[in-house]
Image 1 (cartoon, rainbow, N blue to C red):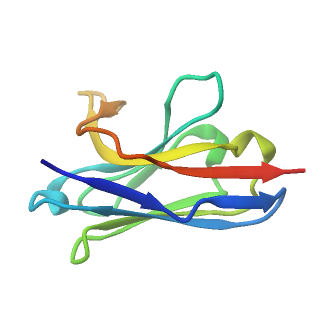
Image 2 (image 1 turned 180 degrees about the vertical axis):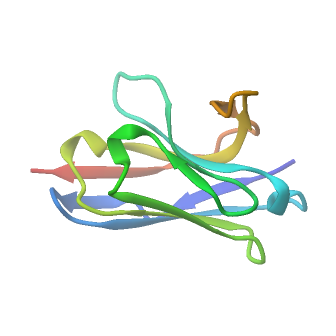
Length: 123
């Protein structure tokens, strides 16, 4: 059973930065596409960024140029550097292995979700 533990969230003002960390257990980490997702109040969970085993990454349009995903396969960790934060980035952020579709689309998380980490951006 893979366990995912997210940390690094907090309260930040508009335009500020945060760095989220995901620690994952399991021996298959290095071959998995990993992703960050978020769920804002009253909304569905959405994917934010994914990074493949080789390091290539994709971002949802709303965070392009502001967020950067990275991974350390030796430590089984995934980070999300978030800059120029906006109020609409307020959400609980989760990490998970990403199930990808044949056209490269992000379908869903592969494992049970962790507790997530809350990011609140105030104006």
